[in-house]
Amino acid sequence: MCGIVAYVGPRDARDVIVDALGRMEYRGYDSSGLAVADSGRVEVCKRAGKLANLTDLIEQVGPETLSGHTGIGHTRWATHGRPTDANAHPHVSADGKAAIVHNGIIENSAVLRDELTAQGVELASDTDSEVACHLLAREFNQGDNKGDFLASVLSVINRLEGAFTLLFMHADRPGEIIAARRSTPLIVGVGDGEMFLGSDVAAFIEFTRHAVELTQDSVVRITADGHEIMDFTGRAITGRDFTIDWDLAAAEKGGYDSFMLKEIHEQPAAVRDTLAGHFDGNRVLLDEQNLTGADMRSFDKVYVVACGSAYHSGLLAKYAIEHWVRLPVEIEVASEFRYRDPVLDSRTLVVAVSQSGETADTLEAVRHAKEQGAKVLAVCNTNGAQIPREADAVLYTHAGPEIGVASTKAFLAQVAANYIVGLALAQERGTKYPDEIREIWAELEAIPAKIEALLTCEQQCLDIARGLGAIRTMLFLGRGVGFPVALEGALKLKELAYIHAEGFPAGELKHGPIALIEDDLPVVVVVPSPRGVKVLHSKIVSNIQEIRARGAKTIVIAEQGDDAVEPYANWLIRIPQTSSIMQPLLATVPLQFLAAEIARQCGNEDIDKPRNLAKSVTVE
Ligand code: M6R
Image (cartoon, rainbow, N blue to C red; front, side, top):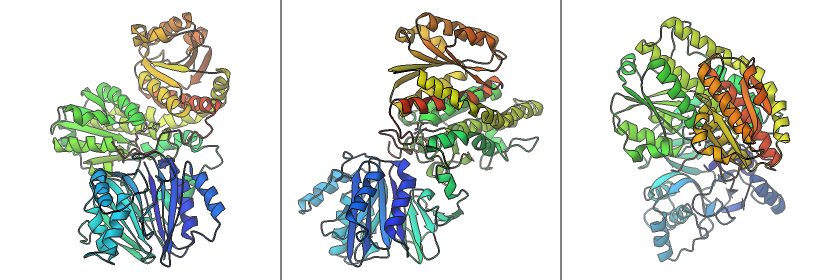
């Protein structure tokens, strides 16, 4: 959702913050802004639109403004109020001295607005966030907390309902920033004589590897010399120190045109690193032992909850777990889960899949599952994020930071991790013999090299995309594990190229969607291996013929050596041979390249930041 950053130290706060906003822009790009405090004044610069608009404005106002060593910054994904200059953060109090930035939603903002308005405060924006700076100014300027920055902040945050990370700055307290977090992320960066705050470590990775994760309902006060952490009453508590294990290069494009293309090319490593350490030659190993062997044997049902691409990875978990473990698996979009009153108890395993570990829908599903007594295993790419923290156990994917809003390498890493969960269950419950598990593991381990080889299809995908001409709609068909791949391909195209796209099980086509087929409609077909379930392969070949007969242009993804599909493909993309269940880890890759290039052909140059989206969706 929004990205926030704070700096206190000897450097020029403006430069540190603008750079940090650049690395966090993927969290939201409706507007951006920063405030710098020094010698009794707060200066603010903010602009609707992408960060480039803000940097242009900073250039216009000149380097002498915004100079100082204490600052806060924000990049916004709009919730309350349109993406305008006025609604951009930071928000500043009427006396011009208190400034805040906010990520989350203040649910009781309407009541607080009314209260402030009744007291004569004029609010300048339509946001829920702005109330916080006026409340801070009121506390700081009068009453029991007069002149006491920390007491004023504590008083304000205890009046707020909802989810928030708030950074508070006051002109009369330069050299000091106070932050509070409830249900949205905030990480402290500990430098040498300088301190940072960020929604994620990308905010300060350039300057320090030493970070501190804060627990729910934490307040932190930073100065150049250090930090103190407390709860919402001001009682001292501790955070968890950790070392950031990726470097600045991971958060930069490294010569690629976009983060997305870089991340597609990083997929062999993402899958390899996710598998690493989870098989010792005999046994599959999970990261944490909070789920005991007895737990694993006790489950009578599995739910997978996730959103977007993570949900598609969950669909594949269903295929794998039901096939390998013979345990029923339900997969549910996280935002629907708790409202439907699913049947959960201590014998239910809930697998929550989330790249960011912040997605509010998935987090609430986790909380609901735990309340009902289920055990929760998080599959997550972000160390120490809220979802893994609240889960009983966690299996980390090691895709590295994913900056492109469209998920690519994190998706493949999720599929690999879900398969590790499936194999661990099969092993513990004895539904697969050790030699069968070894065989499946060997197939998994062979996947990174196969993805590597497949990356050479990039040029072919570009040519296909360019040859398609104008597209209004595109369909994606698959059968078996090819169906989630079709859904993922359609999602990529929708979010990047803004084209209507839908994924269907190929067999379902004749029950309605075939009416959409018209001359030249492009249809992607993910063909299962002819070496797998034979009948499935021959049925999809028939499906391709059916749509070709009605004028569709087919882009067929089929494994090397599958000659039967050749006569029916307008374009044929070959993928390396693998077992059926592993095929999604390969078949997805050309669909990512296709979506990226079709987006470009449609004039969307900035594929890392598709319109209306944000990388982490921290509101329900
Ligand atoms: O961080 P999460 O994995 O929980 O995010 C879930 C979805 O928001 C995410 O996969 C989204 O669908 C991507 N933009 C898809 O490319």
